Image (cartoon, rainbow, N blue to C red; front, top):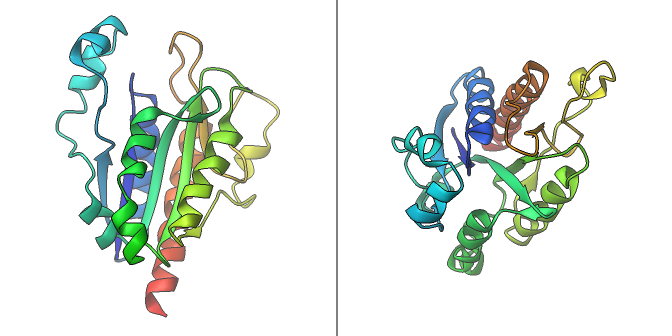
Length: 204
């Protein structure tokens, strides 16, 4: 059973969430888990202007996702930063390239799940996830979120991302806040949950 964690990360926030989701998925017996990046669409000059060059270097060893990666997966967790309440352009560009997979029904029945990040508490975490669900549903995927069995999403003792739609993190306006332990725990739980559901579906 193969679980793919496919993410985009500018400054490293979603990278940490993706690693946590992968850790959770690996807790499920028989799960073969791998990390993949959405292909970059920005030039090195723009990335440098954004102050993200060093963070991008840390991602260099993680392979870019391909259509074949999606096809061979039993479950896919997408880690997608928010851009104005929607998915980032890198994710949109890749999804727009998957028309051949849609046409041939290659992703039908596979588990799909989404995590997100925003600068602020109300910057589009839920809309980013649910709008991504629309794309996954067009591919015929089985949507899996973050159930309330993860009690950490109900906390009111601290600022924290997380909802029934999926694990999320709040980065701060300057990217100064890295994922909290509660947010990472949500990602781990989601990763394990996705792997468990995918395993049940694969078993028939």
